[in-house]
Each structure stands twice: as C-alpha cells, then as structure tokens.
Length: 337
Image (cartoon, rainbow, N blue to C red; front, top):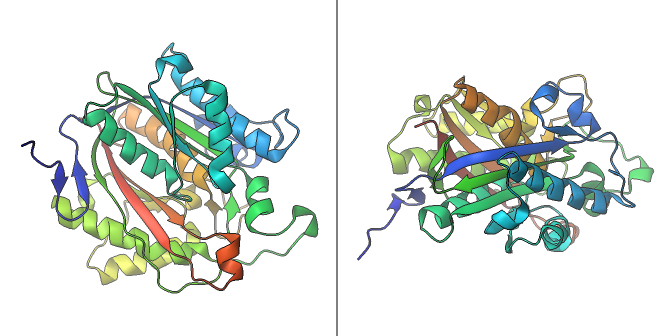
C-alpha cells in the first residue's frame, strides 16, 4: 500500500514537489498606480478592457493571464493538460467562460478569495500524484463586477466604512510542472471553515482572520516548523483590520510570526489610494503571488514563503437572510530547494 502523503491533521506533503515553472499577473488601473506596478506583467488602461461589460472584461483578464503564463515558456493553451481556476461571480462565469475560449480541460473552483491557494493546493496534488505533467492554476476578480454582485449599484455611491475593502481588479496564473526549474510547492495545509458569528459584510477581514489563524497554527503543528522558518508568511486579503485581529489571535495561540508576517490586501495598495482597510478579491492574492512575491522568490530575496489565501464564504442571499460569514484559509509552502 502506498504511504499517505499526509502529515498531522490537515497538511499534505509533496514527495516530488511540483515546480512553479511560470507565472503571470494582470491588474487594473488602480492597482497599477500602487507600489508594485513594475512587478505586474500587464496593467489595464481601463476597467472594460475593450469589452462590452465588466463581466466580459474579467473573463478576458483571466484568459489573457493564463495565455501569458504559458507563452513565457513558449507554450500555447493546448500544451496545458488542466486548468484549475475560480472567481467571485455566480457560477464562476469569469473562469468558465475563459476556459471555454482557451479550450483547456477545466475544473472550476470556488473558495471565495482563498481560490488562488485552493487551486495551487489541488494542482500540486494532481502533479505530485502523477495524474498530470502540467497544470495551470488561476484566479481573478474585478472591482466593478464584485460591487454589482455583492454590494450596491456603483451609481448609488454608497459611503464606505473604514473596515471595508476594495475588491482588486486583478488576475494571477501559475504553471505547475512535474519537471523543470523554479520554486517548488513543498507542503499544503487544507483549511477548515471557521465561523465566529461575524455578520457585517463590510468587515470581512474580521470574519476571515480566525480561519487564517487556525490554518497557520495547524500548519506549524502538523509540520513541526516554527514561524521563523519562513522568510515571509502572507495572508490573502484580511486587510488592515483583519490583519490586526489575526495578529492578536496568533499571540493567543502562542505564535508570533511578526515581523515576517504581512497581508496581500495591505501590501497591494499604498496608504494614499483610498481603499479603507485594504484590498480583497481572488485577484488580490493572485496577482501578488504571481507578481511581486514570485519575483522575490526567483531573485532569492525570499526563499521560503507560506502563502495563506483567505476567503469569506458568504453570498448576497445568505447575508439578506441574516446568516453569519464563514471564513476559510488554505496554506501553501513555496520554497527554493
């Protein structure tokens, strides 16, 4: 019998760690005005991206980002064996319609803003397990498609509160391979749904922070590693409010990852861009990973990264019905080995 590739309660060990052979990122105009502009592959000039609707623009973003990640290896979509992708929209239409256009075998995923880590985790399992040689993982979000679906009509001009976050217009795509060169995915910790009763949809960072803390604590318990093992531990999109709460929860759990802890939602924008608590959306962590973070790993500035994308598993319907907001977080260890 083949030994389980599992360590502890929730962590997967990859015996043949998949290579992240290529990656690509695309962001919208606002994200392109932030501190990481030079690290993104493609900055859109406007939010419609030469399409008739924001939804079509988001699907095109994802499609072109996938194609760009493959083209960096002089490959075409037909050279990929599987696409794992997701987004925030109903029936993940951005990803599904992008998959229709690139014609790659497709598994659609929904983990809210944790989708980039979820796709990377599942893709690594499939490559390490010998099911595929080359898998593309991707995620996207668009500020105006998310506003239309989850919040208020943009034209209504509803006042934001300090705990609210700005959904990033962004996409990230990675190419995982069994053989190659590049950083490798060594471990992955599957998160549990954690719900502490938070009901405020304008404070999703607080809803997700307990899940982030639980997954990170479990990762260290399962692997025997300590926070200082990693050069950087980065959560997905808790924003400033959620990141502060996560820090308090870390201390409560006996973990003190600072100063090597940050959050993609805090990093993506600068303090003058008017995004309240920070960034959010599948594309927030997606573009940060497939842009600045992997560039830093490639240069050797970071050699060990724990990427912990977080998601708020709510819908407009559940919010209207007064349900609390469950949170999820998945952790993926990416290392130069």
